[in-house]
Length: 130
Image (cartoon, rainbow, N blue to C red; front, side, top):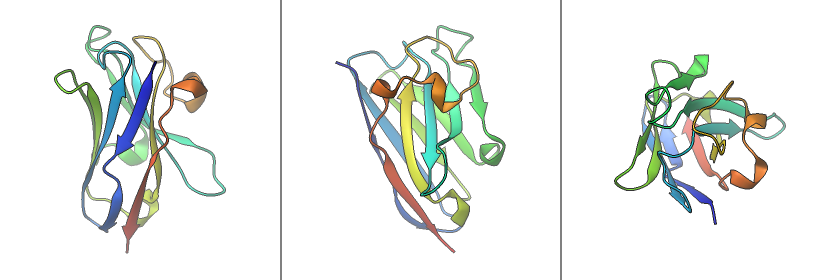
């Protein structure tokens, strides 16, 4: 059974850093493309970053414009987890962050609807204070 569990969220001051983790089970983390997404109340879920399986396009990555230069996505086979390192956090980064898989080795657009609903974690809250 595929499971994804996010952790690492919390309260941080503007300019601080957090490292989100996505522990996966039921598959190998280097088997499928993984994405990070976020959602705030009243807004649609939006993509943050995606990474393809290492065996597909050498683990190609995608970052939303707001994430470029500040966030880094990675996957670690040793602990079967994916990560999102977030630096220079801003109050507008406040959201619930989710990880998900496509069920394929690659991703197309890194949009949320590319990721089947049954393969999402429950999210972790990130709050950035001014």
